Image (cartoon, rainbow, N blue to C red; front, side):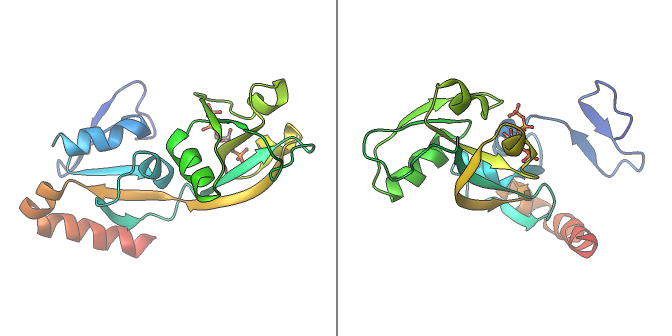
Amino acid sequence: MENKQRKLIIPLADGQYEFILAKGPDVVTYLSNGIVDLGIVGSDILMEQNVSGYQLLDLNVGKCQFILASTTDFNPTSAGRKVIGTKYPRVAQEYFARLGQDVEIIKIEGSVELAPLVGLADAIIDITETGTTLRENNLQIYDWLAKISTRLVVNPLALKQKKNEIFQLVDQLAQVI
Ligand code: PRP
């Protein structure tokens, strides 16, 4: 796995497992179409895709948080419709709906911190791990929405058909977490 180069399918030497490498947002697609039995994906993506039933284990890695952030002059309680930049439009929409605020969401694919700096958005909903990107761009956190970590997810049919093997793997993983 460390020396995978550009390979996308990686069988392990013992022949017991084969890994396929996919982008996070595609993991549940491969899972729900029966291409893989198990997936490894961030809970940020599961929240954004509104997927709830597939989770087997919190792998306790890739830990970060959903935050509301902006420049230091942002006022989160000000009147008026705010513009929010984010890679997570559903998470952002639900957050502001809970607050009773009607906002305009602009979907951004990456480097979300740029949006409030150049005036594309009033604030962002994004994930932060170390806080370095926010700090280096003079952005401030105004609210913490949810904790995030990497999850093991399962195809429900695979769970029925390969129950023993899957739970054996879950037990092994749980021991090293
Ligand atoms: C994520 C996130 C922040 C950054 C936060 O971006 O969107 O930009 O990590 O990490 P930090 O708190 O440790 O600085 P990612 O690196 O996934 O790439 P992206 O900018 O292309 O979305």
